[in-house]
Length: 254
Image (cartoon, rainbow, N blue to C red; front, side):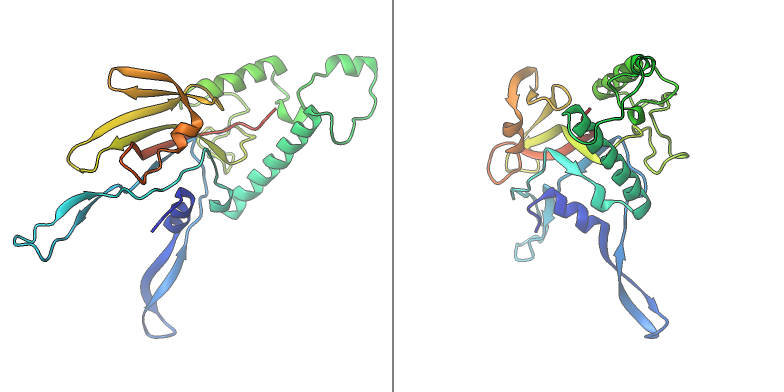
């Protein structure tokens, strides 16, 4: 039984497999552990809400389709660091350290930079050197980051701030400074106790890190849904229950 989505991911990456053991000279159960070596821009999780229940005591033994109403919570932000292999963890760890330093600098914390000449000062800008590629204008870089946050387009880009699977363990056109955090972006819910009927609705966050959501109920659209309302769609009752959840990569704070 699973109560939290995070636990299901961990269980999905671990398990047992039956293989022949040369030491025991017979088949044995081996523990299998898998880790993620490359991350996507978006994550999709499907909840097991419907199943076929055997009915051996019935006259026809045909069984019956059922819906699982059990509450399974899902987070607003998911951290995949623990699910990654060592190489990918090293990349994420370095990016997190860099993001922490940049955030502290924006708050006026940390070590103050050494004094520079007026010519050096005039040529610098508020964006940390490590955050802006050397061949890009800082303003263009900020505009690109904002566009990436709002865009749902997964087509490749030529920007040096985007990685490819051939040059980085991140892969799949993720930002080079990605820290391994994904933000809940949308979900599909099902309402009803039957596997053969009910009603599906869609829920979409209105913008990155926004607390407002759209609820698409056929032709009716509700625009004042809050994040706390969405997180209650975890099950445990007759109301709408999450069936699919979608997470989008989250950019570090600047």
